[in-house]
Amino acid sequence: MVWGHGRIDKRLALLAALGVAGCIPGGMTPQSLEPEITEAGQPAAPPLAEPVAGSDAPVWESRSVAPNAADVIGTTYTVQPGDTLRGIGNRTGAGSEAIAAANGLTAPYILRPGQQLTIPGGRYHAVAQGETGIAIAQAYKVAWSDIVALNGLEEPYILRIGQRLKLPAGAQAVAAASATPTPKPGKPLSRIGALVVNIDDVVTGSQPAIAEGTAVPPARPARAPVAASVPVDVPKGFSGKFVWPLSGTLLTRYGPVGKGQISNGIDIGATRGQPFRAAADGVVSYAGSEVAIYGGLILVSHGGGWVSAYGHAERIDVTRGQAVKAGQVLGAAGQSGFAETPKLHFELRKDRKPVDPLLYLPRG
Image (cartoon, rainbow, N blue to C red; front, side, top):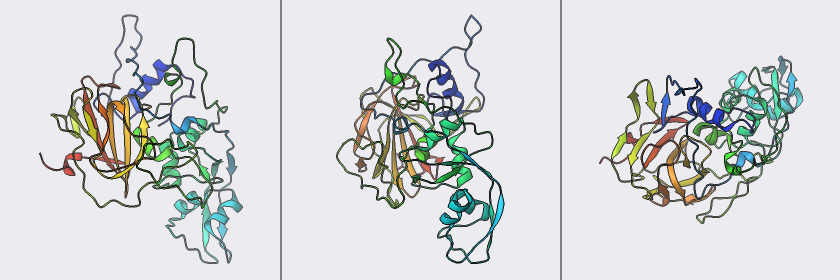
């Protein structure tokens, strides 16, 4: 979920993170969360996270979005010989993904002459080069997850230039903000104007848009910068097994943990600076500290809808777009974000949904 306009007060941003970023300290989702109240009767702001060594700059901050949404009136369309779903979308102004979702069509989207298609009305944004889903959602003040659902977007979640995305009801355009905020005196740039995002936003909305048919460069094992305009190559499938990312005491299990809270993963006790490792082969899709509650966070895409997440790192040793092997060191555990003690927060997600890691890790 995306909140604010890139220049909101950092205290409000972190309070919003507690309510909507998908977790609280230890990686727990709050069912109800009352902020601490100060003697002055105001909500107390949680502590600011320190910058994490090795973090990449967020891709979604590299390209601002100029809102260009156009309204489309709902209608029906009769398929003509030679029509394609993409062509019908271009002709009607609606997105081909939204048309497919409205008519229950699935790949390879075979159409027959005379077929009647529902053209869903609404507001559609035309994607420009380099735009990311997170930045698009910010430009219209809506949740990116709602756009994903409306348009039936799927892995690898790479947008194409000219693609029309249907926007949720209530979308309202805001002025395009500079990709690089102006720092205030005495405040580091990395801690100003950060968007509040959750893991699912990063998984589904951080890939930059490219021209249709453009090949995505294969991932490389070396740690080398990948341009913000270049998408990350997600593996096509996963048939391997997961291994433990760290040896330590199991502090928190997956699922309900009391007081209306649900843990999206497990917490493993660690010493500060203790290396943690990739749970399986894959490609680093994110390495940064923009999900405030987790602090240093690494996401690895394994293909087939599988993603592993590693939070509370104090040092990150890999970079976006880097191919990694099972057991390869990704960084060092610590107490970044909202961790009360040094530990590693570890999640496994399948098709965007958190699953219990203990069901997929070796026993013991």
